[in-house]
Image (cartoon, rainbow, N blue to C red; front, side):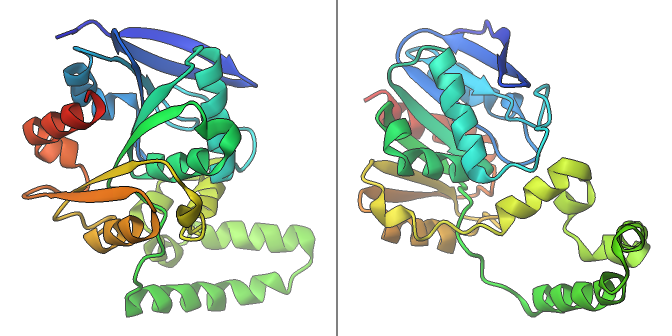
Length: 266
């Protein structure tokens, strides 16, 4: 096994980006989830590095990579990843993506200018499907609208100051998700852009083979979302891992790595 991890920094546009590299052989690009970084999947990368060159990116806004200077959409992250692949001179590569990385992967696969370099794709706990909403979601949604309404009637500068004050109140902070509460500035808007874009309409047009490897106890992107992906993707299969959640590669590392090897190194 290759235990040596090389670190390099690339500048893509104005974004200084950290890339970790391990192993030798056909390339695998790792795309991590929201709030994570390249190290999250390092143990899987080390396992696969026996027969592959594994590249792990800190996506913009995470780890040691710069925050974007504007509120990116998922498509912007896909464009960025393609630029990284081009800079690394990868003519073909596999993808192993987790959660938010799955959203980016679907954008890459949906663009023929990007997808022609991609070979095999493994997505675990992938995001991008519209979730089933609980009543508490709608309660929070309409409470937010009611709280914001008086401030929206104010003129420009007063409106912005009022909304900023509202965002600092205890009741407002309780209404947001734990991910949202930890964010501010550009990353907060990127989070909103991300979680409000649903990708069901893109999947039927993706011809690539996609392997979906899911933790059976995933409560962030539940199994029904993986099942919906399998139904919408023309060339896909779904496998569930027992006693594993959203981070199946950490909950069941030996089993996950064995399956990933069998698929990506076949």
